[in-house]
Image (tube, rainbow, N blue to C red):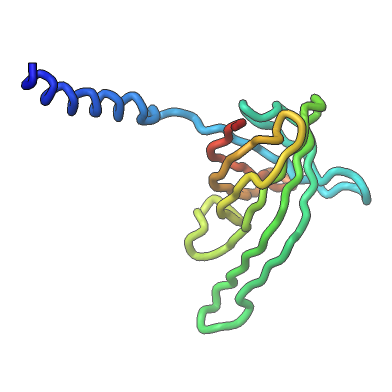
Length: 156
């Protein structure tokens, strides 16, 4: 009996680790924003999202601060900033806000105009307890830009 317990404990841990590991091709929730340049007082653009977020709505950006390296030993232009993106769900279920840091550096993926990390920093209604973080990418699409936020989102 003692021998069975000694060998079964590692097996139990291995099974638990495998069960807890995410599937290799699991799709992370994503927010896709279509950026437009609206009239004064209008929302900045529209978005679509996957669960657990609302399926669609509008957003506005609030520039918090930023800077850049306009001179220096490298001819490459580096810039970064801090932006709050306020999302309002079209179904009236609530709002949520994401803080992100757009960056353009040599590490920026080649298909992105800007990229960087993001974090959920607040919400109302059904999203009052929303938590999440991940990465985003801004890329040209047609006459405008699309920004994707891909990461983990949970309502806890």
